[in-house]
Image 1 (cartoon, rainbow, N blue to C red):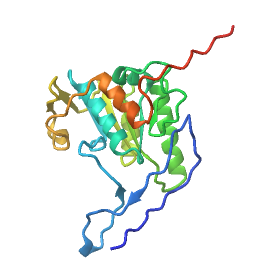
Image 2 (cartoon, one colour):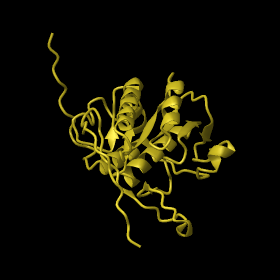
Image 3 (tube, one colour):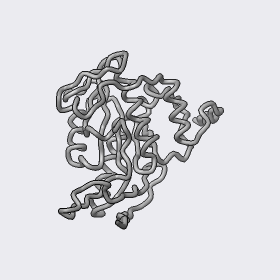
Image 4 (cartoon, rainbow, N blue to C red):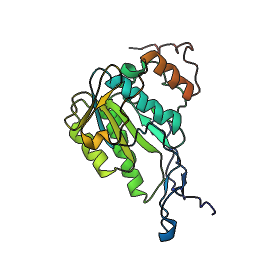
Length: 232
């Protein structure tokens, strides 16, 4: 059986502000050949699928480690098909990044806006552009963040674009949550539990930072860039 190449829609390249690239699609390995079913899927899904649940709230002492694992899974396993968006405060909390790190680097799988509002503004704009351009095959978007006071805004965004964006959320998320203990054991409502492993491996912030830099092809202990001088 010959593999058919999926078409990729074009839209302007927005480096720096809009870290974007096209995602390659392949015809499914499954489907019902007797009925002629051929549905396009992303080329790969990792064992720990960060996109299994469109809106995943996390709580408990193991929640940060779980958010790290899901984020790293998206970056390490789906580098060519995923764009992870992490607001700067969450990148600092989850990966120990400083204010100066990953500002000047070319890091297409990862976008770090200044705060959650900027992250959501980017996602809203990006998804509106995709919709306006017709069917496109942009990277699958993953937001990893503390939901802060933006639960309604996040819910509306994911509900409107469930096949293009998912969110891993910390903080006071009002929806269904998976509670994670120190050992990585998950307790969740049935709708979430059936799509999650019983236990997730823990990863420290230091290890997560090293893995993040590794997947981005950067040296984790390289010197920080000098701070820009301020003029009055």
